[in-house]
Amino acid sequence: MKNILIIVGFITAILATVLSATKFYSFSVLPIIIAFISGLVLLFITKKAQSKTKPIQYIFLLVIMSLGLTIYKNITIIPKTIETEQIKQTDQTDQVDKDDQKNIELIDPQLSQPKGKI
Image 1: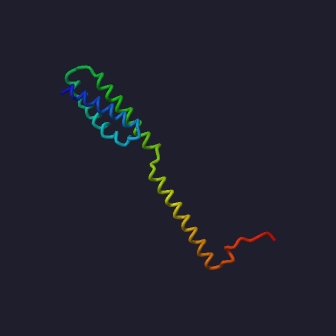
Image 2: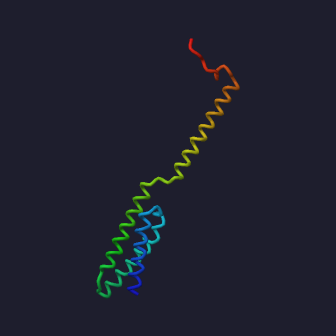
Image 3: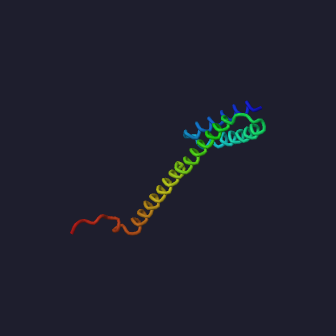
């Protein structure tokens, strides 16, 4: 039981660290949770059995690193959907400005003609 939890903890902690360092950082939350839970269960098992705690320390170290990277990337990286929404809004305002200009030309054609030097 303990060896299986160590293996699962290491695999998920390494997977979480790799995912959090790449552009797929949003998928690293599930491996972080699994590694953290397996680390906690291992902690309780080793307290009862009085065995070595080095694997648990490495699992928690990797979990903390990947959690820190994931939080950092979630805060600093701006999603591209926001940028495309802003571009769409500016395109819509440009279209409205063009429509207003056409309406002004229809109402008073003298306003739309360029004026020369006097």
